[in-house]
Length: 380
Image (cartoon, rainbow, N blue to C red; front, side, top):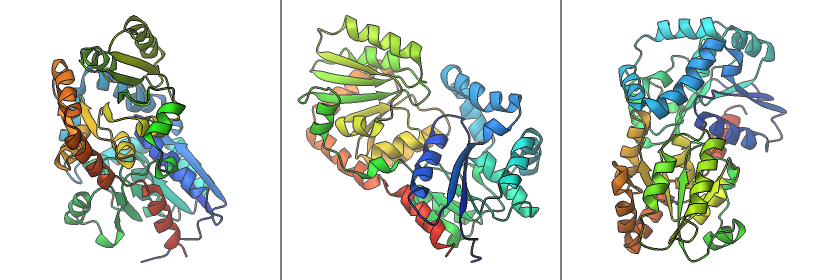
């Protein structure tokens, strides 16, 4: 294998189409910063270097579709998941909208480029083919499956979540020697064991109640308010930590709901955007969430079982399949049955314990370290 230059300048590229790609990039940023041989490391959101229309399409339209028309996203996912189809047309569209990015990366001249989104990996591969940058991209796939959009002709490494994904890429012609089953990178804080009791005390939660963690993701999307209303029908004392993300409107609604139900069996603790997600996961018994790649990886790193609610058709449906197959999750397809599903789990501590053990086996809290060490080792 051709060795890369000494990685004095590392550039991590993501896109703010959902929060997961950014969180994976930030996890890698923290890991690179611990290595003395890396003199400079930066994380760029590629959408800041593209046209206004392109940014709107990737960020605002994506989030609007998640909330209002998820089936459209599923159709788009399936219709574009044919390996190598329309790759030239897609590259032409991305080059047209990413002129400032193409100039900026050539000016920065990084020695190592790591991509946690498929758009920058496609563009960097093009620049490497034209000898306009000195290194091909290392591609970090941030879902359990690998959609055709992630496929590249020019690459340094592929880092994937599962052995099954590795097999899929090999069958498509990706060099087996350049595929690493690393897991999806999560913040290094997830590597540190944390006691459930200690975290409940720190976060002001009751120590002796089952704790349900409901997450709307970093951008506050999904039917969180409806989930909480259904959980209020539970017949046993529980506490529900509801993460509203960056949505001030959702947090206000949850706070009003918590005030109205403060005397009931189900206690609601609304939380806005937080950097303590690892601690809330350590404190919880079950995570109720959409199965995004990063949320899933963080939960598994904490050994936290999941109840999957309203997965986005497409990548989250596929993530769901893997989680259910591994025995780390249950799925609620209809909100009116949610309390029933949770009651069944809480009434069966042995099953819940088995799910927790399976989740811990599934998790890869060292993913960021594996990726960074692999890249640095090949540069020696």
